[in-house]
Length: 153
Image (tube, rainbow, N blue to C red; front, side):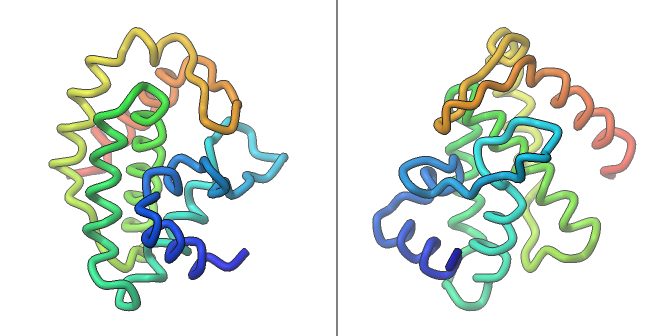
């Protein structure tokens, strides 16, 4: 897949949210051996459409963060997708592979507020645009939170 064209197409059509969600022709298939359910290949999108475009596409870091914030404000499936990207960003930053950094504290606060509002749905199930159903995403959110509390200062 040509990720340079994918991100440019999403930018031209103002479809960055669709790219992040993996909808409308933007889904990057996750390995069938993955032990979990995802809307798209989060790490592949993050690395190839955003990190590798830093310096090539002006303001790509701001574009990513602005759209991540929109996902946080969305319905439960969008919020969970945003949490997956947030976690992937932290992982890449810890490995020193990120070409830009997100404002973790600000985003974490927004996520916390949104999770409190969407708690009921997140403790049940969510449906991604690709039709996949994630049962009880709350469990993953709790695990992520435990890690952040321990390791993010």
